[in-house]
Image (cartoon, rainbow, N blue to C red; front, side, top):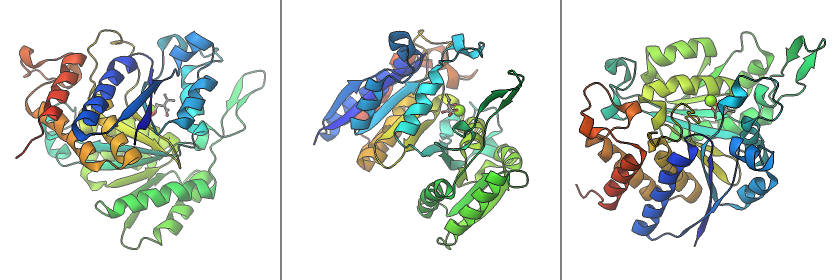
Length: 363
Ligand code: IPM
Ligand code: MG
């Protein structure tokens, strides 16, 4: 059966890296005999430029009809230093998450052994770290109402809000995943201060009661931020809200060596959305030097979660491992010892991974 994949390249380095995600899909399709059909759509700054809207209705319609979505990145510097702009690229991504009901954001943080020196953290602290974040994605202060200004604009407010069903559905996914891992869930909140966190904690405990074989550890977010870099190996599954998850997963990217390596899956009850964690990186956009591995690893998540193609997903991850083991590096994961001949641009890195995929290891 042919699977429909919507490609949304987005902004900045998005198109450059997503090209290699797509080529990875193509190669997997050829090797394993699957047919993928592609469509393309606009989101973010690229969409504002073309249509005036960050999420054009055509994009939402195509997204709803797709079997999976591969996304690049969002954002443009022209909005970042101008808080008066009413239309912003990020609104497109948030509206799409809400429109598709993508409440569950999976962010696996796994250190590739080869990259232990690319991180700013000590190798002995990092080695073996393997964390799966469950970040709630359609609630919290990101979407809470009311929000706005009062006192003639001199006071601004947002609303941090969670309902029990929102906490329960993501907590259930986290506990189920923990059963296939090391059976430990850290639930991160700020229940010593926030009422929404007290509801979070209470609900997670209720869910945990159905999983007596999985250990639940409640942790305050400030402590979690510290524990993550003090001893990342204590974490297995981490369950948290939208805002705390946004912040902690950027921090945790250092555990994997580089932001350029991390993929994510945003899941709801239907079409899932797969994207690198990194942003649009305007400083290097258009130069063809971005690391395509996060997009390629997003394809691995897509194959597994959207289509249940586990062997195919593993083949992609192995191809990335092989490429790294051969010493190939883009700028963001190179270090002082990396010889000039091993330093690659985006296309060269993409090709190395495809070559590693094309020759499956027999060993
Ligand atoms: C992320 C990003 C987004 C978020 C932005 C671009 C709206 O930082 O996916 O982590 O805050 O969720
Ligand atoms: Mg973020």
